[in-house]
Image 1 (cartoon, rainbow, N blue to C red):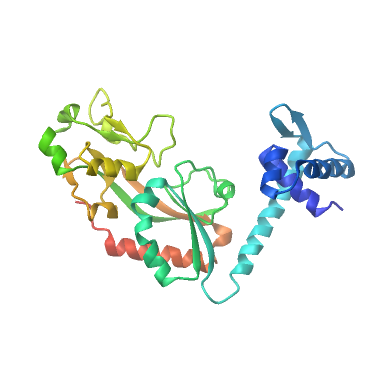
Image 2: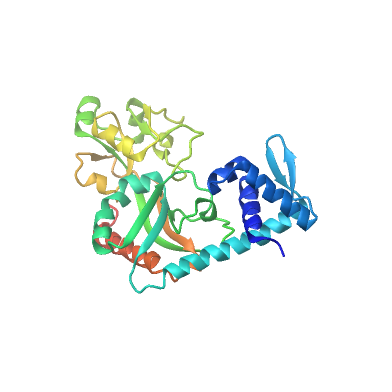
Length: 300
């Protein structure tokens, strides 16, 4: 019978394709991991890795073993989560992943209210525009557009729609005038999100640049929705924001070309099917649906 500790080492080395990175995650020495891999190969009588200058690559036998061990690790993680759900109280850590714009311009405004209601739940929120998979990020809930072709069994429940519109500060409009149509935007300063090769929170994030042909050039690029909002508040230009964002409540920004509709971004509440019985996932979902029903107004 294979040693479980050696199989666990094999899993992390195969996952990282690198002994050094696996050693850092497991907080053990590289030499110790190397010995475990050699012992596992000796007792299994199979070569599990091909050594390359760039790292390690699984052999065919290694791929078979990795898929089996991965299933074991997934089942173990699920069991650990289920054990945490046994107490009757709603408690524990809830790891949530969302786009940076969703975190900075929406979710953060409601965290205090959530904690007041559920003080025993410890939220860990990751705001990142680069997303691979729930398995890779090791989170329990994802707030993002629908995930296509997911390899895991995911429950994806529609949460809300963001309606993107154009806004500017009154001081900017005094200095540069109020555009009357999209052609007028050629004479205005547009604030856009990042460069082409930077991860973006959703497709068509820079839709305002495509309102005329040829495509408009941005005045300032900022890889942050809150940064774009702050720049617009400072009177630096015209920005695209979700009209559902709480940022606009205390802002002096006013709509620009209000009849122009930007993309509509559907956001989903996503979690693994194996976690469907978790109380903290359920109450967080109900909380978000409640505040959306309370605070979101119909599109104007």
